[in-house]
Structure formats: C-alpha cells, structure tokens
Length: 465
Ligand code: AMP
Image (cartoon, rainbow, N blue to C red):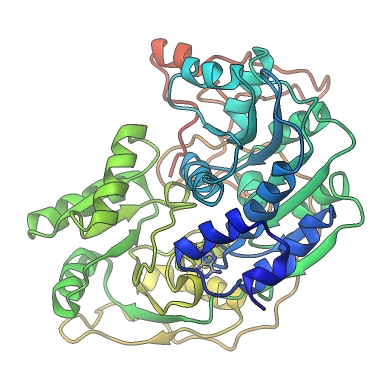
C-alpha cells in the first residue's frame, strides 16, 4: 500500500513525502482509513511504529474539511502523559499540517500558563496537552470543549501509570457526547480496557505487535557485571564500540546525575534528563543530544517517554526497571520504524529477579554476554525456563502519584505493582486530587503550579523519574 491509496489530500501527501516516508507503516495502513471513516479506534502500538502519524494525518484531513475553531474553542484534543511527548506530537502535527490552514497548540505544566491562555484565546484546531495543565486551563475558562470533535488518548497506559486517571475522567465528562475517540496504548492491560469501556463505541481494534512484544529489529543483550563496575563498564563499551549516540536509562534521578558526572569525568559528553530538571534544561539536553554535541543522554523512564530521536541506534539499561513493561518502552526507543537497534542491559546479581520478570513479559530469554575484564564476582544466577504469559486480573484503578522520591514508584495500576513507599500521599499539590475514602471529596486543594513554586514546592507537573 502507498500513502496515495489512503484518501489523504495532496497537501498532506506532500508533507509526508517531504519527511521521506515511502510506505505507510502497518499501524498507519490500518488506523488512517478507520479514523477517516469516523470510527472509534483502539490501537495497541508501541512508540516507534509510526502511531503518531497514524492518528495525526487523518485528523488533519478530517479537520481541514470542517469549520475553524471559535475563540477559546478546540476541535481535536490529543492528551499525552508527558511534556516531551506533547512537544513531539505537536511537532508532528505542525510538520504534517504545514500546508493546511489549521492551527495547533501544545500545553503542558512546568512553564507559564499565560502564554498558553493567550494562544487559546483565538481558538485552536488541534490542542496537544498533558492532563494536569489542561484541567487548569479548563477551570480558568481558557479552553472550551463544546466544539471538540475528536479525542485522542496517546500512550494511555502511561497516563494511568502516572496517576492521571481522575483528570482524564473529568476531561472526558466535560467533552461533547458526540465525538470520535482514539485510544493508543503500548499495552492493553485490564485497566486500559476498563477505561476504554466508558470511552470508545464499537471501536476498530488494531494491534500491530503482539502484547508486550519487543520491536523485532532490536537486538537485545544482557551483560552480567558487578554493580560497582557498571559505570566503568559503560565507559568501556562506549569507547570500545565507538558509540556516537547512546540513550542510557537509570532507575533514579540521583543515579542519572551521578552517572552523568562519571561519564564527564572520563571525557564522554553526557547530559541527564529527568523530572528535577527544568523544562529549559530538558529541552537543551535533548537538542544537544540530537545534534550530536552530547553523546550520551542519561534518562529516567518517565523523562524519556515520548522522546523521538530518529534512528537511535543504541539504548543501554544501566539499571533494570522495577516494572518489566518499562523495559519494553525503553528498548522501543531504538530500532524505530524498521531501523536496526541495539539494547544492552548491564545486570548485576541483585537484579536477577527483575531480569526474570522482563523475560517473562517479553516471553523470550535475552542473550547474555560477559565483557572481557568485567566478569562479575557476584555471578548472575542462570535464567530459568520462562512460564507462559498470563494476563493479570482486572484491578480497580487507584489514584496514583507521580511525584515521588528517587527510586520509589507509585502504585502502578496497569501492572499491579505496589509502591515501595507507604507514603504515596501527596507531597505536592499541583495535581493533588486525593480524596477522602468515605466521602469521596477532595481533601487537598489544587494549587496552581506557579503558586506551588512560590510556596517552595516542587514543580507539580514534572515527572519524577
Ligand atoms: P512514532 O511511533 O509515531 O513515535 O514514530 C516513530 C518514528 O517513525 C518517527 O521518527 C517517525 O518520523 C517515523 N515514521 C513514522 N511513519 C513512518 C513511515 N511511514 N515511514 C518511515 N518512518 C516513519
């Protein structure tokens, strides 16, 4: 199939051709006609499959046929879990729609709200937003939903993981009943299906990858090593293999900072990207990484979500993630859209259980290779036979918290993992939607992010890892 078979206007086809896309990816082949036909869609697709164009191209096409957005109104709403993904999707909308008379805007927290309000004043055809900031704008009457024709939930699984379920439900209840709904998620956990029940009507279900399967073009390797040797081993691998662009994942913000310092000390240009960094620092780190000025980008999981770096060849798991599904997301950063990629995990003996969980979720053993000179003193136990994958029972979606300390995870409703800390109650209030169990009433007042800053609180919209 060619893009020209997809009933898209010549202006959109020209923008696609300019991007250098030759053929639609499998998700695009299925999603574009379904969206153009006005259907609701539920698509299981990892990042790297071309899902963004899968929904943006037909949305641009549909909106270019209708009336413009009125003042403060929007016509299509794309919700994303992180600022980075919002920026990324916004960029795609602008690129693919550059020849069309449509307007778009991106709104997320951690930056001033006023310019976003100004932008919305004229009305915007496509709004890309993170849920917390959108709720703020809505409550301040800066955005009106009565003209919304299309809703997209992008990376819905991650939005649930990050505790956005209440905001999402509030937003959905404020939208017009008559609308088209598109739900994109890397995995279809029972929680996502539960969310979908109240959202999509007779959806076309699309799955381009079996659940939780890793991108086939990614070559995965585990390097058993001692924990203390990891930084040295990473420097060795970068130099030995002459890696030019490496995305490295650490479990904690603190770990990301420390590793960045270790790399810099060995004259390897590195930058860290995580929730404690200002939006400006994150944007700069990413731009430097993309341009090649920075060789190694050290990221925590949430911060890395949505990063789209063309043809990223190398991903390294410096620590294994606590949640096996994050492994799938992490290595989805490489081998994108058919390009080859390499994912290397440095695994110490204490992480063997996490490795087992990952192998169970991806349903395949990962090849182990010891690097000469780095054989571990504490050996990694041999891998055990992998049990067949069983879907978890549906669980009630709990409110989760996305601001937590280094190394602590919020309750992960999609995976059923419990937080390590009992103190998952609210340290910050920008997204504080805690409720009294008996009354269901909110117990903490929402604080504007700028106010929270003035009060010396952490940026409530920043991802924590
Ligand atoms: P996504 O899954 O939407 O994050 O897209 C992953 C990457 O694939 C992005 O860098 C896109 O620019 C690229 N891409 C999207 N569609 C195509 C296509 N049809 N052919 C080649 N690359 C594509």
